[in-house]
Image 1 (tube, helix red, strand yellow):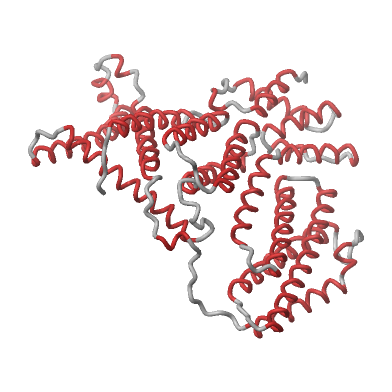
Image 2: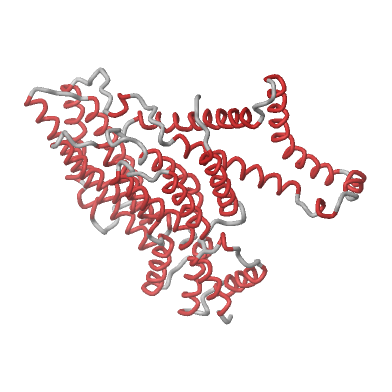
Length: 487
């Protein structure tokens, strides 16, 4: 790769070094909290200072930006363990997708497999840029040297870069393994002994890696290397499915679904139990089966819309009617599954998994509704909507404190029925702890509740104060309320 290196490039490398230090300080010093918002602010500040231009794909770019900030903010405001771990993967992917997208021309179709190829190309270009940058930088630094000596110096520097952290790690391990070797090392100056070899070398390596990663990506974002065909949907010749065959299959499926709904409509939506089933079997067994059937229907529908092409009016209209009927019966099944899960929650309590299942069913209903519109308006793009709907759904369940909803519903259920699972609340994050505190205010003599709170109180007294990186509003509030609680 041929590149030009100027003073601004070296200055920007220093900026990326500062960003790498900020990333290391934000993510490698205990639990992540407020630090994620701080890093995101620093990251996008560097991006906007580096590219002072009108960004492209503004609508989807703005949506992605809002989603990223909400997801990063969830680390500071909520402490859901599930989303904590998921967002460690989701947020970097969204950030990379976002910065590549907004620096691509508006003509580029981002909802295609071709855009995934561009994402991979940018990583490859960044790697090549870094190699070319430092190679040219070394040549400029040692321009008066002959070629052989230059190559030798470059290899020595590479060896020092790789060997120094490795030497620190090995020295630390040997000091721990052998007392005599440790005594020899102890004769070194005191300031060297005060260094933590293992931790220090690890942190330096992380900072250098992140610096090079940020520098490489930022420097190649503006390079327009994608082929012209990436700017428009790729039309590939593919074998289509025979419409008569598909209509036959859909008629068979829809006939079964309509008959099933007609005969067992009361079983779907009635509140009474079917003979031979316990309440749990009635609610839970039907829920999972209906969700599986609904997902199968959705897969069949998407495959038919993609692979069945019919130009004749009668078969085409028949297909649309069959698609619409399939969507309708799938909606009935989703409504039934939603009701069953609600009955199960009312009887056995609310959990995060059950609440997420409710949210997922709502997403499926929205997807089916849009797909119904797409059946009759063929110019609409399904993939665009599915990606945006999935992004909004995931951002929404992060923005809403799901655990707080679970706690509130369980407390409400306790007031109505006197039943609550305190062990499940205790298994949740600090939101569950605040729920236990609220329950203690309502009923101090609830079995085992006082012991659980006392254990949490003693455990909390032994914990060190959180650093600024780990600051979390929910955690801070729960700790303060736990300290003030008189058991």
